[in-house]
Image 1 (cartoon, rainbow, N blue to C red):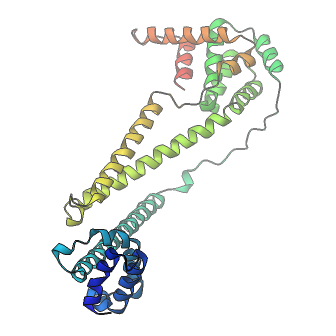
Image 2: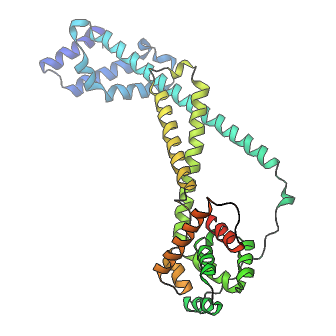
Image 3: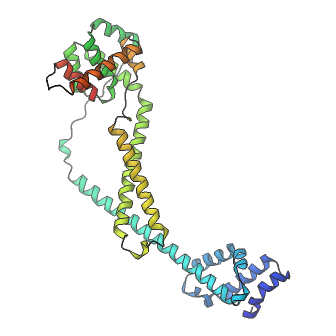
Length: 323
């Protein structure tokens, strides 16, 4: 096909001598046979096939864009294919830069982890203790054990706070509470374990929230590092969308990280035993548990304005509530 025959294709389409599909096929065949004209001989076969595929996909749009008042179709086709080539080169450059950034980030993470783990002294690790063997007991046995203790009001408050914060209690705190109020440690461990079992679903949700927070923190730091490193690069000029995309993602992950950290700091995502579970263990009603919790909360607020003089029981209440 000659150049003048190529210029007549659009006219044949408008007069109805050829269909749109036939014209696009003729154009594609002309480009394949004469690809050196468009500078495609400088690229490999895969690159030429991508350009040809783009030409076929945009063929109808190409025919509607052509205006014969501004020149021949051959010149228009040449400019259009050059535009496709430049767009493909920019896309390849963007992908190459992304791969390079990911590679540098992986290398940096590896080096940071290597330095951290190199400084660990494994001799300082505690020897693991034998896990607690829990014998499942009924709530009636717990209630009977609490009734035998004949606890006073202040002692019940401490026990309720301990059961509410059972997930965070340490062995040292458990032994201190048992020694102060004469509670059998084995029975108290059974109560704590019973309360912990009711938190399995909440614990899985808490772990997911931790993973979200860590994910947001990592990507916030990652995108901020990318923006800071390449802010003076011509590739990140305002005319390219990738700079705005990185800024948007950095802000998005930062807001997510701040929101989750605030929720953790204010205690919205902590694991607490429900009042119903505490009531079943102690043989009380939920209203009584709410009363004791409200009473402890009021005492704690009043003590914030007083000098630091408190009895041993008040100190234990504060410790248990903070836990």
